[in-house]
Image (cartoon, rainbow, N blue to C red; front, side, top):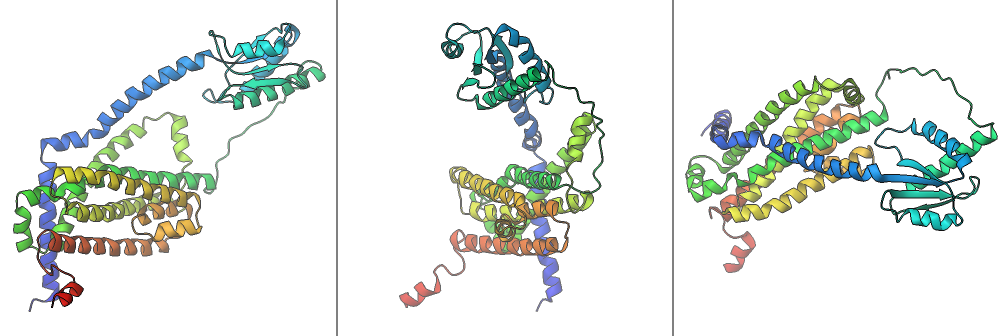
Length: 413
């Protein structure tokens, strides 16, 4: 009888052999370079589309206007009030440019006609006395209408104070926060959830097709005869995880070097991201939860994909797999914004969403012991998924073991 320790060593050696075989077969191929630089290709197409959309938006923004139909005597004061108020807006958030028009015999008809002009795109139009103005606005001009109300009240207040509002000489000083802010924690939680989601969405789906080639070439039957199927499944999962780690490591180094070239304002914005457990521990937990998320989803995808024998079937599985990943992201994002709620507890306990939700938990709560329990819980489910997937493959594809459930065999007898 083989001692348990020797049996464990043999199983571990077999698993690592399968993992090394799949890792080498994936990495040492020309197609891997295309996969490695896929983010550059995707980013290039995204940048081209974004530039096109930005040029269209800029063209439309250039003609967007808010219109004030006021007497010539009010044109200067309302323009001065507009200049004063715009100082609090970022350029991309500022209202459309103000245009002032002298009123005619029928200001209401004049205001309605402004929306039909071809030389400008009116978002909102003000007419009438400033203390009781009438404002018309287009479909997406409600905020512009609110701004015209504020503009009218500011201009009226300046007139009643003698023409201009008093200047305020304020002293502003920046201060460094000693602890983490709630906003910074929630932002860190969302970025953690999104980061794991993005990486697993891009990387773990490839596990689905790893068994199809083995089945078509009959290699899987040789492997199954020499190695336990659980070792085959776990070895393939580890091999593809090694590919994912290589991918993440490569792009992590690239992004870290690009980050050093960021403008100071952007770097300061990232500095506001303050996880509750501290940055070094958060980085370790993020890596641990990415590992568990990949293994959990990969184990499920490997078990499901092992039932497919053709590329058509694998392609048909892509949609439900993507839907599952997006659902876990949506659940975990909602949980990260509501720490301590029943939704957060459910997301942290549900196996497939647990790594995402616990990464958000690390950003929102300083406690460390829940993470030890969560990682053990997730590792248990990785084992369960691999065992179930291997059993399904053994009975459904290899047709070995019990072909029928016990109740059907008893009925046949």
